[in-house]
Image (cartoon, rainbow, N blue to C red):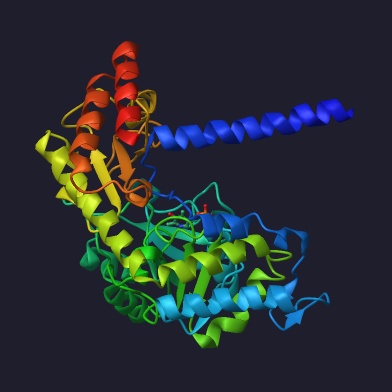
Length: 409
Ligand SMILES: *Cc1c(COP(=O)(O)O)cnc(C)c1O
């Protein structure tokens, strides 16, 4: 490319990022798997650490000149150990998905059986879905939520485990709003002589402050993303008992990944340090308080909230009662037109295909980070319901988006 073309191309990227900044500022960002990273996390993620190719682990790198990147990674590990009390931590996974795959590779043989929640009920694609390599490598069997209550039914899961005789049971989900009894899962896993992987991608931040029970030290393996409730920027993490440390580390590198993403690991170190501060406890309490207030405000306006509330940052709504003709996919489009960014989601026992779905999943992580408090959730619920009622009415939705902008300002 000519110099001028390069400049134009670079400007196009900068302009897209600026537009994105405006979108995030002027919209109600309510994707439950997103958050707002702090300036320190973003600075670390944008740092010169990206110039390094960090092959290996601290004190056993393949390349020389590694003392500083070793320090960064060791700090991230030390802070994570303090946050979650894990025996062994690996902060190198590029994502939560690769963290899960590393645990499977470390603990299972191809053809082994994993027992996981049905994707329609909130299981993740990496829990043995057809479209994911875990579905090719392992036999997958599913347990389901109780369709009436929308909750985990531990007796039914125990019976299912007895029938299936899995090698690993996976707990932890993408759209489950309630507390999880990790001890009960561990008991079920031990009864059938299976490993237990607790995937805490969504709730790791809530666990770090004690606002949600912890599976660390209960399940043999815990995995997570690092950008949902723990707002440390893109990436993943694995925690496990010491006896599995070597197998897990080797499965990730060199088994799955090459060099560590050092800027992201620095982001994790900065974000974990922030999470050790009392301010983060307040943030988590506000996040859950906001979600509870939102669930109440939506219920008051006639929306069916799955499980009638939440213990987390997630509010899952089932639109079949209030907006029977409106699939989640069209609700998502209407909300977006009104400046409310939240995704369609299947609900327990959902009769629709996942591409349509009957529900919407709302999260309060980003709003809480931007300072929205419980009283603000009344206004948010009001806007959500008016957007759902206005689906298909372009002018009404555009007027709403102006109101959303005013609220955000
Ligand atoms: C988000 C999520 C993951 C990992 O997602 P990545 O995008 O790969 O970080 C894994 N498991 C569950 C349950 C999740 O919700």
